Length: 371
Image 1 (cartoon, helix red, strand yellow):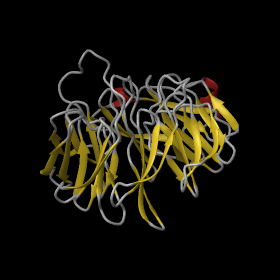
Image 2 (cartoon, helix red, strand yellow):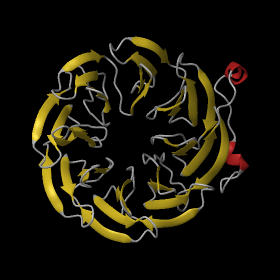
Image 3 (cartoon, one colour):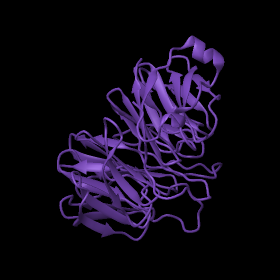
C-alpha cells in the first residue's frame, strides 16, 4: 500500500533494460511519507540522517529541524519534535528514551512514546556523528565536530568523562569526526573513533584513556577524514579515509594487516568473504576480506554512494543522483534501481525484510524485499 506520497513518488525504472529482463525486481513498494515542513529551499537539500526501528516504531530526523516517530506499517506519524537545528544524525536508544543531536550542538533525550523532552545538553559545536550506547552499562557516548568525545549518563545527561582530540585549525574537512563504535572485549568495553586529520583511536570505554592510536593519513591525500565507524569481524577491523586509504587492522594492536588505495566516506558491508565498499570515487567495490584483492568493481551507479547493506545475496546502496540500487553480490551486476526524490545521502536501514530510507527530498520510503 502506498502512503502519503502517492503513486507519483514511485515512478522510476531499472538502470538498464537488460537488467530488468535478467533479474526479477527484488522489492515491492510499501509506502512513502513526507518528513519536512514548508517548501524545499533553493539550495540542494541534503539529508544525512538514517532511520532506525525501535520497539516497533521508525525514528528519523530531518534537516528541517524536525525529528519524527513513524508507524512502521503505513508511514503515518506518531509524533514529531522540533529541534533547534538540523538533525543529521542517526538516533540511539536506551530503555524508553531516544537520543539525537543537531547542528546547533544540542543533544536531546526524548521519550519514545510521546516525543516529550527528558533533557537537553548543549556542546560547543554541531553534532553530526550518531550517539552510541554501550551494551553492558548503558553509557551514552557523543562526538562533536570539534573533536570532543563525551561519555554521559543516559538518564540525566550528566558528564562522566571526556576525551578531546585537537584538530588542526583552518583545515577543510568532510565531517570532522566519526560515530564512535562500542565493543565489549575480555577486559571490558572499548571505543573506536576516527578524526578529520586521519587519526584513529581505540579508547577504554570506562574512562576514556587511550589504548592505541594510529595515523591513517597519507601525504598524497587532500582529505584525511575518517568519517565512518569501522567494521569489525573477529580479530580484524576495516577502516578508511575519505581520500584513498583503506585498511585492515588488528583490533587489539592497530597493526596493519593490509592496505589498499581506496577511499570511502560512507562505509562497508560484509557478504560471505567479500568486503563491500562504497568508494569516495563513486565506485562500488568488492574485495577479498582476508587479502584486500579486488573481486569486482561497479562503475555504473551515478553519484555519491551511501553505506551498502546486504540482504541475502543482494547489495543495497543509495545514490545521491536519484535512486536506491540493488546489486547482485557475487558479480556486481545492477539488478534494479528505485526512485528516491532528489537522491540519497543517508544510510538505508533494514528491519527484517523491510527496507527504509530517507531521500534528500524529505521523503521516507519503505520497500518490502521479496527476493
